[in-house]
Amino acid sequence: MPTLPAALHTAAQVRAIDHYGIDTQGIPGYTLMTRAATAALAALRTRFPAARRLRIWCGAGNNAGDGYVLARLARAAGLTVETVALVPPERLAGDAARAWQDWRAVGGDPLTREASRVPDVEVDAMLGTGLDRALAEPFAPVVTALNAAPVPVVALDLPTGLHADTGAALDVAVDAALTVSFVALKQGLFTGAGPAHVGTLVFDDLGVDASASGVPVSMDRLSATAPLRALTPRRRDGHKGDHGRVLVIGGGRGMPGAARLAAEAALRSGAGRVTVATLPAHVAAIVAARPEIICEGIEPGAEGLARLDTLLAQTDVLALGPGLGRDAWARALWAQALRFEGPAVLDADALNLLAEAPRPLPKECVLTPHPGEAARLLGCTVRDIQTDRPAALARLCERHHATVVLKGAGSLVGRRGERPQVCDRGNPGMASAGTGDVLTGAIAGLAAQLGCLWQATLAGVHAHALAGDVAARQGERGLLAGDLLVELRACLNP
Image 1: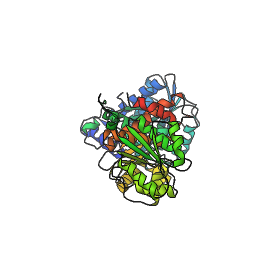
Image 2 (image 1 turned 120 degrees about the vertical axis):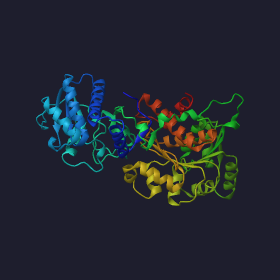
Image 3 (image 1 turned 30 degrees about the horizontal axis):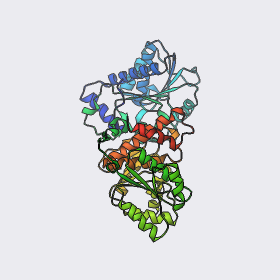
Image 4 (image 1 turned 90 degrees about the vertical axis):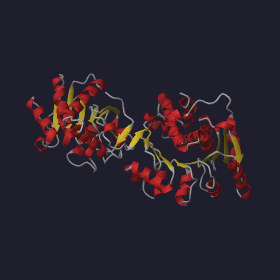
């Protein structure tokens, strides 16, 4: 089967690609359905070689058709197969109706839920990509039962209940152990709730040439675009001045660790010199933990702000917000720092302060909100953000005229005029305090070297996720932000 492509699409775009395969390439629809079932059977038997008994839940449309063809092919391969018709087969049309008739012709007969035995594998062939509302009868109870089943579930094309475009779970969605996606990859598989419901993802284009179809691409998988290629080898005669100067402003009362994590991440990403502007009481702790960091204590008042201006004048890239706080000292530094004319990365309290008092940002700026911060910036709820993460990303980019990293499972990266990217690396262990500070520092450090904030953001998001995955090899539970610092260097020097 083909490896995962870089290009991701909406459900409407996938339907257009499917029509291209039928109308222009001349592949009959039933041939595509048979190829899909063949690919699903091969993936199922590879992943679950001991499985001998399948139960296939068939719903509506071509997803049900895929299920009935799979039932016929699996029985021909010697497996015991039962199908459950959640929609009367007589209501199916076109290729799906033919698939049902062919299954019936070889003795297939839909069972009730109560009549069938527990199989080795359950197969979700219920609804596919067309769903855009919460599940109702008869599907919702079945999805709930499948998620409680003692055996793995294989989803055909898309887990039922998952929105193909947004990655939102529409109330309840199938928790698949394996998803076999067809024709083109749906963007909802990779962000929001998608990664939690998809399990292992296998793809087959069924012989349809999406690249020749003329159908636009909605976003790209970040790992497939090789963002680290922007990091060219260093010159033999280079010195620290060639690799950029980063200033981290943060570390308010009780939070020196956040500024220190961001600063070390900038150093580990290759910045030539990194300075932290923080409360005077935090200087000793930061320097003791990492003596390579230059640390300046900024007193409240005019004298402190004058010193901050001097530091900003000596800076190539600004990282504003890690552990900054929202007291009077923090607000004064934040307002002064936004006058900076170079590239800036804003995170944490810099975003919260921006949400409270919107103002113009530096011309080149990256915002790195998690869903809660994004909701405050857009004046909505976290649920609104997570219900449609791609739309939230677009709104943030448009409102703030900035590059935006919408963090979370399947972090999204976008800016006006660029195709969005979804980070398809990373793991739940990274949901711990400080990992966002590491990301901020990594982007700032790379921006100081590359001179292109967009490339630096893509490379920083990808390397940060890779470092998290390497660190998680010892287990996701208990992973610390500092563990990413240990791995970041190697991930940026493959």
